[in-house]
Amino acid sequence: MVSKMTTAQTRLAAAALDALGAVDDVLATPKGSPSKAQPQALYAYATDPSYQPDATLLRLLHGDARTQADFQRLLENTASYYIPRMAAASSGEIGARETDGLKIQFRASKADAGQVYAILEIADIDAQPKVLFVKHPDGHLDRLELPAFRDGRVQLLLEGDASAMKGLMDINAEVYVR
Image (tube, rainbow, N blue to C red; front, side, top):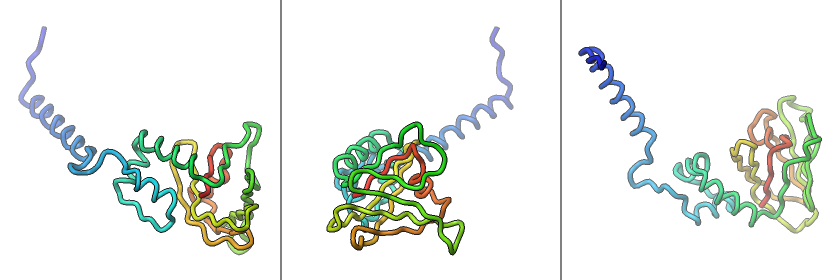
């Protein structure tokens, strides 16, 4: 047996459908907004520390699986240094991460207990990497502009609870330096 909706139930159902339509409108890709990242924008974001990405690129990098996969391949093919996830036997806080030609050491700041130095050392003292990416286990990506290396060394002072620092010290995160 099918029961007929009351007027109040009909109004409530109509209001619910209107609300769902409004949510769809808010979450939809704006008209005229690209649904695919431009290759030149991805390349500039990966290689040029002064490049300021637009909101669309950031949205795609953080929410579009295809864009994330494309960017991952780009980093893999252009990074000068890559630090993979650490061995499963590693646990707790780490004092350093390294790969061929690159070592990152972590030192607590004596001036501010909430800050940590990330000291990058590269074997090729003539190289001048400009950008560091941290890919967190959940896919989130942090991008840090690197200052000029001196004698193959540079140090960054970051808040200990900053996303990038947490990622650098996370054994399950990956690091790309370009």
